[in-house]
Structures are given as C-alpha cells and as structure tokens.
Image 1 (spheres, helix red, strand yellow):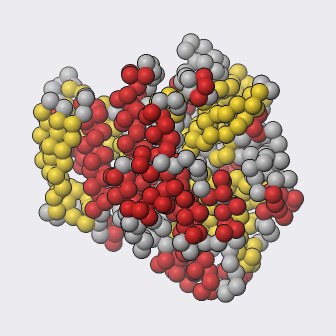
Image 2: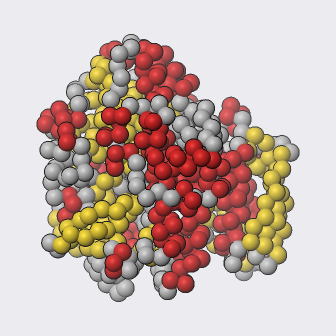
Image 3: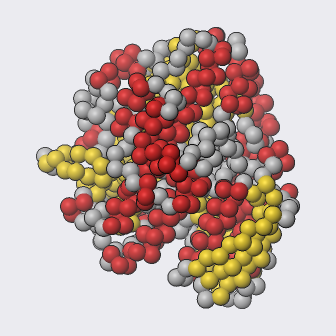
Length: 476
Length: 137
C-alpha cells in the first residue's frame, strides 16, 4: 500500500482521509512495514465500508488486514440502527463465528512429550478433520433448532461439557436473538453430519506449550504457566454458517437497489438493520454463531475424552473462547454518548479492556483474553484486551497472521510430506488427512504473526500475555 | 474449453473459458474441483441434477457454483464431468463424479461458498466466453 495516501497519526495508526462519499475516515492499525505490505485493495475496501449508511466513528483495519470480499479481512465497522445503519453478510463472511478456544491442561511439556505420538494419533482418530469428514452426531429437526438457539449451552445440557465452561465463552456461550426459522433448509441439511467436526483449510486443533510469559498478572488470571501445555481449537460454524453466508449474500445483493443503497461494490451487499431482511439475517447469523459455539464445545468434549485416556484427573478447564466473523450488538460510548451499535468484526476479535462488565469476574481486572491463532509450526498468542481499546476500535484486535502467499504458490513451493518431516524434526507432530492441505497451510505461507501481535500490542488494542508454540497439530 | 485457478490474497479464484457461455460455466466448475483436488483423479458416474435461475449471468454463475458446492458438501462427492445448458438466465445441468476418497484424492480444503469477488461473465472480443469468481476456502 502507498503510504502517501495515508496520514500517519502515530507509529501504529494511519488514517485514510475522509473524501468523496466516505461518511467517516478509515483507520489502519499497523506499523509501517505491515501497512506497506498490505494490498492496495485493503485501502479500497476500508474506503468502501466507510461509505455505508449509519457507520459510526471510522472504518477500521487491524494489523493483519488483507483483501477480503467487500470488507477487508481484519475489518471492523460499527453501525447505528437509529441512523440508518446496515448489516452486511459480506461484513461477517462465510465462516460465521470462526474462532479459537483455548483449554488449560495443567500438564508439563515433559508429561505431554512422553506420550506425544500416541496422543497425536488418538486426537487425530477422535476429532473428525478434513474435507468430507463427518461427526458422529445426527440432529433431528427439533434438536437442530434447539442447537441454533442454545449454542454451547445446548451442548453442555446434552453432556458435551460442563456448566462452568459457559462463563468462559463470549456471551456465556449463547447469543440471544437467534432465529432458526431464518436459516434455510439447505443450511440445516449442510450441517446434518458436521456437528463436532474441525473442517479444513486453516482450521486446526493444536497442543501447545507456553513458551514465554509477557504479562504475569494477566497470565496468573488466565491460568497460564511457563512450560505448561494448553490446547487450542480453531474452527467455525461449518456448513451451516457457510450456507447462511451464501444465502444472504445473494439475497442482499438482489435487494440492495430496493433499499436505495448505492453499493460501491456488489460484494458489500447489505440491508438496513431496521428492514425485515436485515432482521432476518441478524437472526440467521446469530444462529450461525451459536452453531459455531456448540461445535467448538463438542470438540472440547472430544479433546477432554482423549486427554482423560492419558492423564486421568486432568479435566482441561476452558481458558476462553473468542469468535471472529461476527456482527454483535454492543453498547459503546461515542463522543461521550452511550449508543447501541452493531459491530461487524470480519477476521477480527472482540477485545474488551479491563473493567468491562461483560467479562467473567476472574478476568475483569486484566481484560478479555484474545486468542491469536498461528499456522502449523508458528507461534500462537494469548493477549488481553487493552485499556482504552473500546475508544480505539470498539474493543477489537487482530485475529491471526493472514496469508503472505496464495494457496497455489504454496503448493508449488512446498511439499506436504517435507513439511511434516521438517516439523517433526523440530518436535512438532502433524496429523492431517491431506498432504496437499498441509502444503497449502505451510507456516511460510503466512505473514509473521509476531509482527502482527507486536503492532496490536503497541497500538493499544491488546496486550501481549503469552506466546505459545505447537507440539501437536491436527489439521483438517 | 479451458479452466484455471487464479491467485487471491487469502482464497482462490476459479476461471472457465469456452466457446459458449454454458461451456465457460462447465469449465469454471472444473476449476472448482481443482481447488480441492486434481480433477484427473476424479472419475465416477454419480450424477447430480442442478437447475437454477437468476436475474443476470453473474448471479447465475454464483448460483451454479454454490449449487455444486452444496452437492459436494451434502453428498460428499467430487465432480469431473459437466453438461450445462443455459437459456435466458436459466441453467440446467448434470454433474458426474464420485464420493471423496481421502487417500486417493488428498482433498486440500473444502469450499465454503462462491463470492462476488472478481465475479465476471463476459463475452470476450475473440468470441470466447469467460466465467470467473473467487471462492472462499
């Protein structure tokens, strides 16, 4: 991206000036190198989002922003329903509530490494992963609707988890206002045998070592200890969420002229929050979030069962569960006034700072855990929402590294078999049904997650708490 | 008929070229399979009948690809042969393929949906038809 088109506001904040049809400016949170590496399309998309009706304060891009569909991936934008604000299916994306949850094991690296290969094999056998994989759960129509309304709470009530898990999930594991009737029969059919499945692409289950602690107070609050082991699960709402995205992107694109929405780009398909279509999408999208929360809850249960075989008595409490790809109704203070806003976070994580009333009491003093996923062989991170982040970007932070290289390029340059062998030599055990999938997700195909995290930390979005390194990676 | 996948920051583009619009749509479907696996490894005679209609060619392409994605997802199939006919923004087609065999097909990533990104259906100056878009993986 050309720096001359931006106004540098600080070392880690760059303004895209408000011009033409933009209703607000754009703000990119990143250091100079990250901004220069961003595609020009990111600026274009930040500008396009800034043109949408009802947008409040600014159109934001996180340090890992890259070219998406309509909204940039790493884009954050809040809309006021009382000011003609819109909701955009493209601003949430296909993988509704794709996210990360982290489980504490209380085990040392030595204890886990002693059973490394067997543990990796059992996790791979137990966790359905990859294209075409199916779970063991089949839901009746009534149960499907109950799951879409209940999220992780539904899963816990059915025995996949424990009550205390719910308090460590955004919105206590269940987003209110989900409308199963707004979810198409096709979306439900697509989910029929995908409950409790990991998916493919960049989704994974990783057993990780806490390599370094940066913020001891937050680490103590989160239960993280140097050289102990955690498990991170990265996946989303599976076929149901994908189909909701497909259904409503199309419907919004067709309906846009009727709302007199002059979209700068058809990818920005959206509908007024006050319209029946906007409300219907909101209900369907919330059902999608609940599906993702239920899915990650079931995968948590399966993971605990495997660990129970090796380490009886270790019940793997949940550290936290965060979602990316959401639109959430939140109260934010804008120019001294409390307003009810609909915050789109596409490829971005909610990151409420210390003192926020929605955080569990045990985390309130240090801020919300923010879980940043790595990519097979690279570090992952635990951050904490920074003080003042609500004023900076509606309480949002980055979500990962973002790709540095296309999938085609990655498969041309890397061999899946070689990557598995090289990582094994470094003590990282990969289990995947597809070597081509491993090549596409090669660690080198991604940007340096460390520089993204550093930028988020120094921009005051989220503080560094701990760096994690993989020991075992089950890859879809 | 020619197909290819093309680069996109995070995802993959699928592109088909053909002597007719229908041929370009069929070629684009082949590129869709190539996102997941090598299409030459996909045989089989399991058929999926697909019909869709849309207000314009671009939405019709989106509907066609999304219908294939739906069939792949719900029936766990991969497709490698397509017959497509298009009349007045109405498409009827049959796709033939076989169930996913993980060991043989080594499927890389499932496709979540076809997007509006880089979405184009064009009659090119050389007389060929082009059909393309980016799919989310």
